[in-house]
Structure formats: structure tokens, C-alpha cells
Amino acid sequence: ADLSGLHLRHAWRTRQWQTEAGLELLDSVSGSTPRGYFANGSLRYQYSSAASLGGALSLRNYGVTAQSVLLFSQVANDWGSTRVQLDLARADTGERQQKLQVDHDWSYVQSMRLSTALSLDRDQRPTGTSRGVGAAVSAEWLLGPNFSMTHSVQSRWADSADQYTLSSGLAWRFAPGWSLLANLYAITGSTNATALAQSP
Image 1: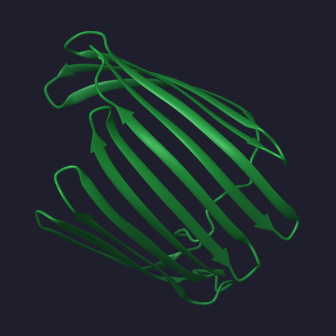
Image 2: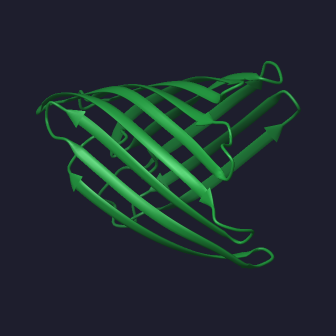
């Protein structure tokens, strides 16, 4: 990938606080890209046994200069666990991204685990602005003590292009600590909503 450099990671946890940080010092092997860095950090606070909140920050200065911030709140209730997350990102090329997502992990229903997600996003690029609405459903069934099956459907409807993703998986735990997995994916449509501030 024409990359060389140094990668550092740090993590610290207590009963209420959880922090993680990373720093990548980057250089181009061929010299086509100036030296740069990618730094990210996250913080999570367990407010109570049922509620937590936190955020994350990413800074990239390699090839492009970009920043992103993430804020979330998660609350457990009688129906399961709900998480609300806001993502904001920008780049020096004029690109902007905003996304609001609500995830919910539903309480176990017999041998099935169900989760749902709804999202609103806005992707602004020099070629135009795309606004989208997303929805996802994922279900996992326990077929026995050693077998489980997962199905998920994800959809994003946007004024630029729609995208649909279907995935199915089967897991077999054939020995303690060992599992065999099989997954099938089907994707239609397209999207250019790639993250701006990410590690090269």
C-alpha cells in the first residue's frame, strides 16, 4: 500500500471509564506522498448500570486532511438496549458527512436475538450532495448447542442511488474455542459514502 511507519495503541479501563487511543506516523515508500499521521481516540463513561455515553475523535493528515467526531448514548430498558449515535466528518477537499443512527438490540425471544437500525445521512461532495435514509434488520437463531444462523437485511434509499445488502451466515462450534463459519452476501446498487477520516 506504499506505506511505512510506526503504529502505537493505548487502552485504559475502570468500572466506569474506558478510553482508547491510537497514533500512526506514516511515510510513503515511493515518496509520492508527504509524511503524515493518523490519530484517533475514544472515551466511554458508564453513567449507571443501564446508561452510558461517550464519543470518539479521528484526525488524518496524510494525502488528505480530514477530521471526524462521533457522539453516542446507550440506554438499557425492558425491551433491550437502545443506542443513539451522531457522526460528523469533514475534509480539506470540501467534503462533508453527517449521519444520525438509532440502533436497538431487542431482548432475547426464545432462541432468537433481534436487532434493528434506522439512520439519516447527508454526504456532500464536489460532485453534489446526497441525502439518504437507511434501515437494517438482523436476526440470529440458536439451532442447537453448537449451531447458530444469522440473517440480515440492510437498505439505504438516497436521491443519488439506492443500495440493498442481504447476508446469511452459519456458525458451527465443533470444539471448545473453535468455530467454522460460512457467509453469503448479495449487494445491489451503489454508494459513495465512504468514511473521510480513516486510517490509510
